[in-house]
Image (cartoon, rainbow, N blue to C red; front, side, top):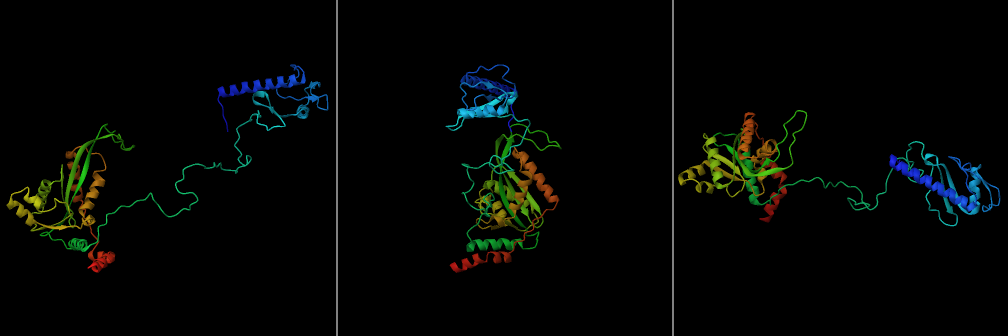
Length: 378
């Protein structure tokens, strides 16, 4: 469907009128007859040739028969198509020699009203309009069938090498998780998480109940921070601290805080990963020997296997804190500490615990082939 504005319509009108006048002058010059105002009706043209043989050179033309006009020109050697009323009441013609291909433009009758395009008439498929796809980039090789591959879905994991040392440390951690609660010998999990501090360049809009939270995409970097967390899974007791770094001094200070929180304990079983600061050397490098020795005797260390941090339940708590509290921009370390401490306090009051379900028996059944491979290598 084509729709034109007034400027385009006026140009089409002038073009049709000019070409119609040129055609009339051409025809009557060839017939040596001067057109008169009476012989040119407004909307329809027809003529009758007096000479039936088609000798248009000496014939007199009278405009009273439309079909005779086309017949006479055809005998002369011209091929003419009359479209009747063209746009704005003018008649359109298309002239060409029958001895050569016809490429000239044709002025057709204008549409009386808006009509839909009939694809079937043009030789294509009827109904829905379809366009051929040639030369377009294909997402897969041509002429291939669909399959069950889904490359847009991804999963990532960290698998360590199943050695005897890996299995020994894994079973030691799983054994501790299976022990009943003992307040004289509590089992805690310790881990750390880095956080990037981001500030707003443009102040976000106030929150409205009818609209989503709106903020600008631009931000500014305000440094980094670290969250140090220790959790007792059976009771849900948590100890948290936010520090600028995670050096041995920070580790030593946090361990002193943990020992003070479990004052009734005779010894604290601590499950940690294999970071270089997670050992007693941090105490001796930052405390007097007497205090360092006493703090060392307070903790019983059990390290997870390399690439086996999935055994540390502190990561589950840090993941919950990250989803709830850190899914937005926090500019200062003071604000981060306040937000994290409020969230941890709320979770402690709700008595949210961690229920570990993976046991040594399930590990031996699920990882049976790895146990067999370790035995065969020996």
